[in-house]
Amino acid sequence: HKASLIVDKDFVISQIDDRLYGSFIEHLGRAVYGGIYEPGHPQADEQGYRKDVLDLIRQLRVPIIRYPGGNFVSGYDWKDGIGPKDQRPSRLELAWRTVEPNQFGLNEFVDWARVAGSSVMWAINLGTHGVDEARNIVEYANHPSGSYWSDMRIGHGFKEPHGIKTWCLGNEMDGPWQIGAKTATEYGRLAAESAKVMKWVDPSIELVACGSSGKFMATYPEWEATVLDHTYDHVDYLSLHTYYGNADNDTATFLGRSLEMEDFIRSIVATCDYMKAKKRSKKKMQLSFDEWNVWFHSNDADKKIDPWQIAPPQLEDVYTMEDALVVGCMLIALLKNADRVKVACLAQLVNVIAPIMTENGGAAWAQTIYYPYMHASVFGRGQALVPLVQSPKYDTKEITDIPYLETIAVYNEEAGEVTIFAVNRDLDNALPLDVDLRSFRSCEVISHLVLESGDLKAANTAARPDRVKPHEGGNAAADGFTVRAQLNRASWNVIRVR
Ligand code: AHR
Image 1: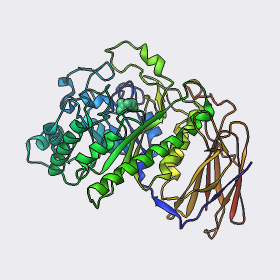
Image 2 (image 1 turned 45 degrees about the vertical axis):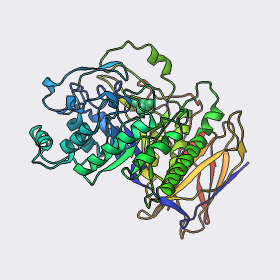
Image 3 (image 1 turned 30 degrees about the vertical axis):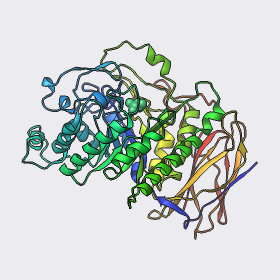
Image 4 (image 1 turned 135 degrees about the vertical axis):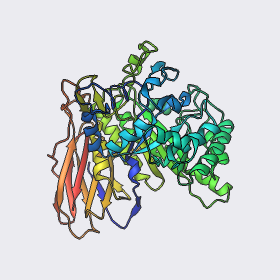
């Protein structure tokens, strides 16, 4: 029972796009109100931005944040969120059955994201809006001046254009739960025409077309093929979404779900490349995995929330140690596909299925899943290297051939560092690992971080925010050009070598 990995700097999957470590904030639950924005909180700055939350976000080095939804966006009028706050309307928000006070909107988000050190990925409403609003919002956000919408932005106090580069053409438009859901043909046509005029307003932008809401949709993957048939020449990315859960407490299977995620990515790549061939196109469609996470803990509680409240506690999953392992495996799945997945957004960032939790008026803290996400974002920049892995495997009722070892190495040439991310999926036993670093001239272990817990159901809470957190006590050590380490049972490991 042991595993090995060969790390060779000449076997490169791809340069990793920094945006692989993106995240997502939706006007949903307490993500915005009571999350990133809470005027009157002791930690709030003059704008009402919570500094404690900003600190936690900055440590994650989040390169890009998708906003304002999610299902929310399909009924959202972006114009409700601009201009003097006391004149903004409160609206019934039909996606999550709340009241949206519109005290935070486009300009606030762009400004907040700048303070957080992130760029903005804006999703437009293609549920109830159409081509006209699509071009108007790009003009408002990105046109320098001298036109109705750009001058209005300037009048709102933002002289410089926001320069929002990445735009999502709607959200999950295949889902019957979506406001203004569409067939693939209806959506494909609308997305293509919206894309066309948006790029006429600002040719420098990049666009993401909606793929399926998930593999579970009956219309998957025909949806993708049809949508791409209409949009291929107009868009740059196709989106993927996936969430995993462990409702029946089958942890061995839960830990294997990232294999499904990889299979999903491969199928979407194949669909994109089929369309490339059909169109005789030179363009390679890239992927935006703009919603991914574990989501299931809050499902029952959410059913009991009364409608039409402002910012009720929705989708507040409290994440456990085992969830952090799944998130770690999902991050590795994204890295393994870094040649095609250029953008990915952990859904979401604060309070709503999120690595960061807050109390209204109170503390902010990091959930278990914060740590693999932070490690990948901070140490996983550079080139993803082909994982040449040998590992014992296991089967569950649902998934077969799950390797106990899930791993990938990232080479950061600038820093002269290699980082090995590794999960031991074995729930009972430690896994000895040999990493062969034959192509490197030196081999010195900088650190071996470990996230683990005696209790796989352990979580961080306001009362015990540090119950699950990484320690430096891994035993990785160099032996010539081999690094040997013991990966403790059910652990996330970050081994940095120079
Ligand atoms: O992230 C939560 C929700 O999941 C999003 O609003 C929606 O796009 C998806 O179904």
